[in-house]
Every structure is written in structure tokens, then in C-alpha cells.
Length: 196
Ligand code: IMP
Image (cartoon, rainbow, N blue to C red; front, side, top):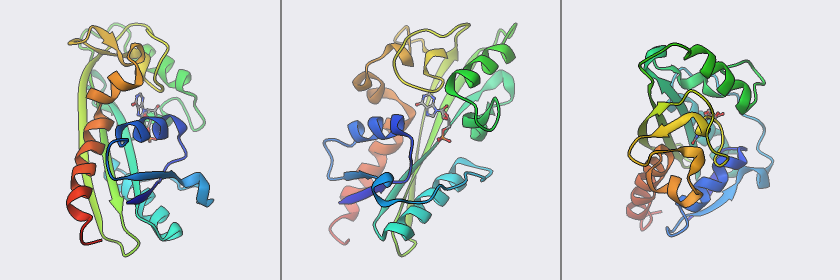
């Protein structure tokens, strides 16, 4: 099934393409369709993900899939959460956000956190499906590793004794919040496909 990824984030596209590589999903980038920018102003991951998928599906007349993700840090009341991309301001870079997070975490002993990913698949007639994935970890005191993107260098997975940024794409895609949400969605699509 040909599905448009409702995101312009190339880091996510690379991961999702790899996660879905052995499934029936033929993923195409929204960039191929000149989909106008979609403002993420929802109060929840689901609202944002649904808005992106619905808009992209209507615009392209193809099924569209989206991902809305946040980092939730327990000592900071589960923030930045839905505001993860603009934590340090409207046009903040990944490193601006990481610097702000490390500043806010100075002196905190509880460093538990989790990534939450909500995936929404939407069809042009408005039918939609959602899945969710999460992974728990620990916020490090400084960035470690050069891979991944976003908050990966400060997200440590105790079982692997590594941050996300120290993992290869394949390793991250075995355990990540995004992999869990998208693999569940791929299973759901397998069941849907005969009727569509
Ligand atoms: P979005 O709103 O879903 O595009 O993502 C929010 C922000 O969360 C992104 O700008 C990244 O900073 C961060 N983020 C999303 N996914 C990941 C990930 O897998 N690792 C690290 N940071 C991520």
C-alpha cells in the first residue's frame, strides 16, 4: 500500500523507512506532493498526529501516516512533552533544546524519562487508526554519542548501557518508541489491506 509520510523531518523519514522496510507499506515523502506546512498546535500527541495525517491525506488523496513524539521527563512534570521540538523557543535547534534540558536538570537526582510516539494513519475519506509506542530511559548529564537526532545524545538506556545516539539506526529501530508504534501500525495495515 502506498502511504505518504506526513512529515518533512528527514531524520524521522529515514527511521520510519527502515522500520517499515519488510512490510507491505510503500512509504513516500510528503515533499513529493508539495503539502503546505502544517502547524502543530494540538494539546496532545494524538491531536497533532491526526491533524498532520488528515491534512496530508486530503491534500494527496492517498493514505497518510504521521508521527508525533515527545520526551517526557518525570522530574520536570513530564515536560517538554508535546512541546519537545520548540522547548528552547520557536525556531530552536536540536542542540538548543538539549542545552535547555540539561540546564533544567541540573541538580536533579530523579533523571527518569520516556519517549512517547503516537502514530496516526488516515485515509482520504477520514477513516483513521492510531497506535502508540514508548521507551523509558535516563537523562544523562552531558550529550554522549553522535548518531540519531533530537534528544538522542542525552537519552540513556540502562539495559544497553548506551544512549540512543550511540546506537546504529538498526539498533535504535529494534527498541524505540517510534519502532513500537509503527510496527503496530504495520500489523494493523496487513489486516486492513484486503478490503482497501
Ligand atoms: P515532533 O513534534 O514529533 O516532530 O517531534 C518533537 C521533537 O522531539 C523533535 O523535534 C525532536 O527534538 C524530538 N524527537 C522526536 N523523536 C525523537 C527521537 O527519536 N529521538 C530524539 N528526539 C526525538
